[in-house]
Amino acid sequence: MAAGYLDILRARHAARLLTGTLVGRLPNGTAPIAIVLFTRAEGGSYALAGALAAVYGLGTAVGQPLLGRAVDLYGQPRVQLPAAVLSALGMTLLAVAGFGSLPLAYGAVALAGVATPPLEGGLRALWPSVLGSEDRVHRAYAMDAVAQEVMFTVGPLLVTLLVSLWSPAAALLVINAIGVLGALSVVLSAPSRTWRSAPREAHWLGALRSPGLLALLGSFFFVGLALGSITVAGVAYADDHGRDSVYGWLMAALGLGALIGGAVYGARQWSGPPERRLRVIVALLALGYLPLTLTPGVVAMTVLAGVAGVFLAPAIACSFIVVDRHAPRGTVTEAFSWLVTTFGVGAAAGTAVAGPAVELGGTAWSFAVAGAGGVAALLVLLATGRVLAAPGHSAVAVRGSENDRNGAVEPGFSSGHQA
Image 1 (cartoon, rainbow, N blue to C red):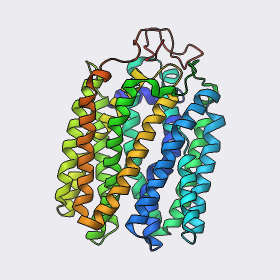
Image 2: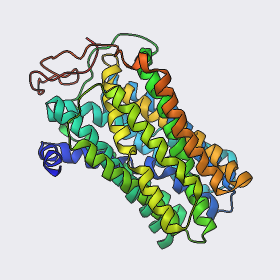
Image 3: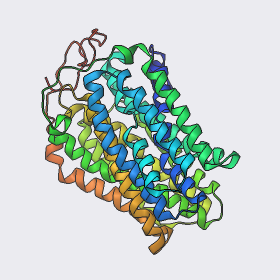
Image 4: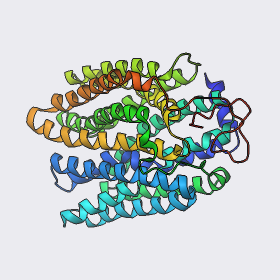
């Protein structure tokens, strides 16, 4: 299992790009919990915390595809680094100004969300030119998903540690400063500086003109909703048990489960259409979320959280392949950014719904939102099966990836983009 991942990490620039992207995405990955903890520390309600997290998520949803399209048109360094700095300034404004003015707080959070750099989509655009063969790129997608779970495991623990050592405001400042350094590491690398997207057909819809991509995004909206609701539900569960650290353990268990699932998934080669495989994985993901509504004791709940996370990374890794199969030519960063946007909108909806659910029906109701999201994600995939079964292009063998102007990709690699 480890040999395949080590082979990828030994490729020139691969470890730096993966690490820099993860560090650069740390502010985005920890923003919901950081905002919730900061709001609660300042005396705000769960409803206000959920609303602010939702504004951040919606801001990300607006900014990611726009910035992704800008990356496809103008390259990575000219977009990623300025965006990272602006996003960090937004969170800094929130930490310094607090809630003396609610419009200012909402504006600061919105700026941080809109300016979140599309590092995730940018990394997936770079993998073909860095790794070469199709098998290695697909394994990198799985490794990418696993590495994200490491971030989602370590991130909440880091935030809670910073909060316990200093304050929620200090946690916001430190996390976002680290994020800017991660983005800087990526954009100064040779692959990022030299990468250029393939020529694209002028169309106002961009990547969204692909029906298959729209179907996938519709499903993963509900996956994002489930994850967003768990953020608020986990904090409420920790409050019920009188210890803030319980939240960190629940999120760590969720991330650890996803890490294990993603590592196993990426260790083998899969046959058959990825769209069909994705339906099975999402069904298992939904099945794992439902028992969380039982809200047992801390030990049992931590175990359930770990089980619930097992199929998350495989679902994400498989979705990357589906995006690659359905994205129109020249829209690679934008297409992956739309996936991030879908998560952002879904997570925003989840946090917005879960907050009132806690106050109306208790913690179990907020976890029920997650279960409902998983079921809805599966239903969308089942309803759009025929669209997803017909990629908008043929995966024919070519001599190079559409993003590899220097011919670094080995002969026979399928670009996965419309000719």
